[in-house]
Length: 123
Length: 415
Ligand code: SF4
Image (cartoon, rainbow over all chains, first blue to last red; front, side, top):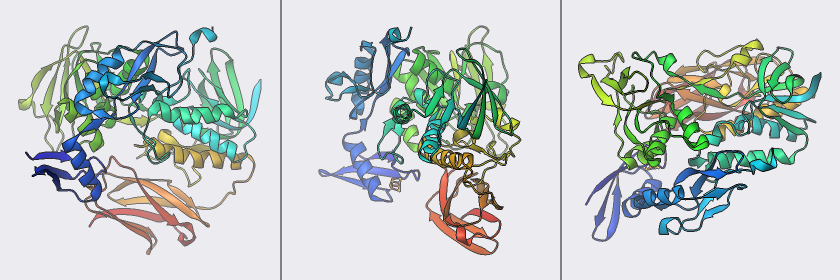
């Protein structure tokens, strides 16, 4: 089955056609090698980094932004978001703190991307 | 009491933080940042998606992470002070700053050099004059972004987005990921000014339609938005074709329709302004025509990559420190003017001399393939070819200053 993608590796935005030629993934429409790599990846296993933000108990800010430390399979994004929504986070939080070891069985960690200090230290 | 500082910086976002570090490294004995928000980091605090820093750090970071790297550096340096919750009200041509804050009351600062790093703000519904009622539920995309990502509040459940700039695209995905339904993104132009990456990963991934040549012609609802009327526009005149009008039910309209550099303070300095960028006219040191007053980041011209903001702010911070210490020589300048498809060039002036200067520019419409020529009189200083140049992407060309002996033109043409 042939699939069409727009290459996102640079602003040119080549239109790629990707298909499985008896076990070998072929790409056409690309102008350079990065398009080939992107096309094969999107065709075989599209991956996405998920970012969100979660409430922080007694934080100086209401929310702490988070991300998956590794990209997760595209079709698992909703499950990962659900796992992030269930998180319960308490201040203080530092950038890089692991908030969840394995997001929805994808093997990806969820880490904090901002610092949130404890509000009670400041009042 | 008037505080004396070598370098004062207005704004503690990406531009202000990078300028402060550069001023310190260039030898400024003390640096003061005035920031009106309660935390430093500026707009990056709410840009929680990733894709920042590929050029500057060689690594993909989220907005808050990118900001934190600069905040960590600044916090290590005792001679850089940040006044938070502090709003600058005036900057005079002789570099006297008046600011107010709940904690310090009236703050008066006399600076050896000033760096303007106030950033930009979003165009609002008022700037667009969309007809209809005035219900709650019309937000700029950036305002919605702050509410969702920083305050933890959802502005609505059923959303139409007008404008396909990057903030609009990013917010389309964000709203869906938080459980809202995004009906569509409407774009007045026949193309999007957003990155392909965002069209693919924000819209296509989530099945959100993008309608080109389409705009919102009326907002409906008494207390709250109940729907909008959209219509296609004539691609030539951009006027709505009312026979194509249709009603779309929604409770929220997000606007992502452009950014305006926030230059009210700049005007008080008497600095000459560029009518195309809506920012100040600067030389390669990012000095405005008001002596000792420098500008960088989105207050100077709207950038698409924060990496470029950091690089520009370094130049401004470094030059400001030099000026404050009497080490920035005054010199004659030549003008840099855009031509062909080039809409603007920053810096708009150059000081003749040694070394290299990077010129940043943007085209007014897509040029494919593009040929760039930088000329000084009849002499060609540099040529460059690219498969495509688009209005959404800032371009850069480096020239040799030794060859500059008069006004410079930067020209992009098809071919
Ligand atoms: S194939 Fe190469 S040239 Fe075409 S969009 Fe992808 S990276 Fe750019």
